Structure formats: structure tokens, C-alpha cells
Length: 191
Image (cartoon, rainbow, N blue to C red; front, top):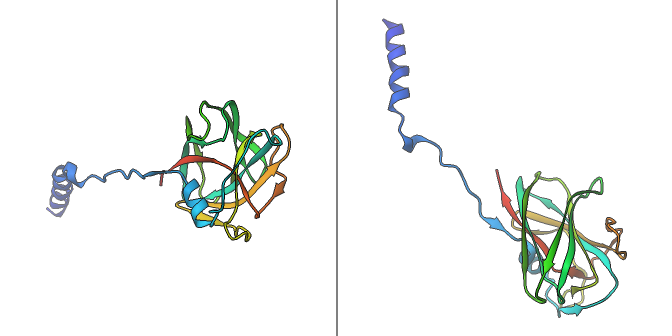
């Protein structure tokens, strides 16, 4: 009798579940951390357009605070560039994860290149760089040093670096006096 009641209870519970009881999957908002990086870092001084400067690999080391994916690279330059190289790196091993070429058709506008999503691990250090002789030079309005890390949403920016070469070489110089960009990405948390 006890087995029959237990069996009946199990069957009843299986059939009594409704669709309303199913977990609703969570969809997280896509974010571009560049504005938060500039704002939270106080990088609010005059913006200087650098056109036809020294070709450099410039960008930021960063750490995702949650697991997620990069779904697009986002750039803005003071001059058009039909073949801007953008690279995502493993910052620990200094190896390339992905390189994409972005066609920046119009100067001084934001260009977004959608890419096959790249999964990023929580608390793993990455870098994103672009190779260009054009960029926006920014610093703090009061001339003080930029203090790292800088958190913007689910991304922590750990440093700004560069290498003054046209080659695909991981940044070897790091500065907290200024930032050269504008280079970013669209990130979406996955869990």
C-alpha cells in the first residue's frame, strides 16, 4: 500500500507540472564597456585626433568579471581605414585568439563589425588591440595619472599598452598617462 501511494505521488507530481513551472532562461544585456572605461577612469580631457602618426599596436588588457562572449569589435578613428586589424589576445600567454579586419568607411563615426562569438572566461586576462597610425589621444583633464584597474559593467580594464610597430606584436610598453583608441567590443554575459 505504501509503495502504491509513493508511486501515485510521483506520477501525480510528474503530470501536474505546468509550463509555468519551467525555468525561464536568463538573457543578459549586451554591453560595450568603452564609455564606462573613459568615464570611470576620468579620461575626460581634450580629445586629440592623431592622423598618420607612428603605426602602432594599441589597446587594453582587460578581465571579464563574468563568463560571456564577445559578439562584435567596435572602433572609431579620425580617418577612414579599409583594413584596420583588430586582435583579441590571451594576455597571459600573449598569443592571438582571433584577428579580424574592420572596414572603417567614415572617419569620426563608430564602426561595428559583428563576428562569430568568442567565449571569454571569468577572471581570465585578455587584451584587445588595433594596428593603426590613426587614433584618438585622450588623457585626464587635470593631467593626473590614470589609475588602473577601471571597471565598466562586467569588464575590468587592467592597463593600456602599445608597441610602435606595424607587425602583429603584443604591446610591450604600458602607460597610465594617456589612452589611444577608440577600440572596444560588444560583450554579453552568458552565466
